Image (cartoon, rainbow, N blue to C red; front, side, top):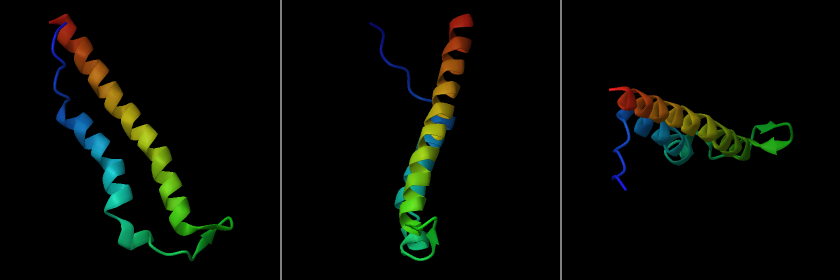
Amino acid sequence: MEPAAKPSLGALLLALVPFGGMCFSVALWDRVEPRIGGIPFNLVWLVGWIALCSVCLWGAYRLETRREKDRGRE
């Protein structure tokens, strides 16, 4: 069993984007009004970041699989 490789900087940054969007932007979305489709803005913001989290982590996965594939060819 070989040790796990360290993730690339790009993958780490992609993984940190949703964390920053949900945690460090509270001052921007900490309000109920306006409502979007009858749902408070803060709930829409968080649900949107949950969806974007999947996209960011998919991108990080793609970066890492490409890196592993390139490493295997050498």
